[in-house]
Image (cartoon, rainbow, N blue to C red; front, side):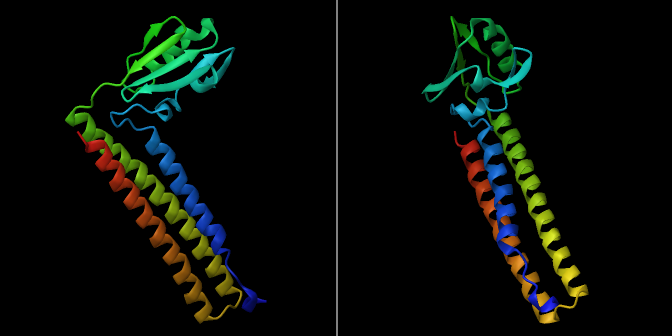
Length: 187
């Protein structure tokens, strides 16, 4: 039975890739000085008694590199949407023009850029922690199989495979982080 042990390495790599995907999504919400519709993804509006994502109460557009517009479908939600954007912590000052809310994206100063690179670093560290947790789960499965009688050679093989997958995932995180930090620091 123990000789039949085969670790679900694809599953482990899939879970690690899930951490990478989550990191990329978090990076999309970081302001880099350029307008991006994804910046508004975390913004929710109290609409019809429920917390609703902003992109479900209006159309989000990026007509210029430094401007986002939100065309609110229900006139009764304009003030709520404006308030949600103002209180979101994005540092954007909404301007209401009829049913359209204009969001001019200000230039980032040096201090704010440095803060954002630290935030990006924290997001990357959270992703590394998630990767290490997946690694630990894989190693626990191998230890359990060792107790069930797999050979030491098989144990070393699977441990090496899990470690290789972990190293590759951490390398990807570091590369994505470096790229994002460069993007943030560009003037």
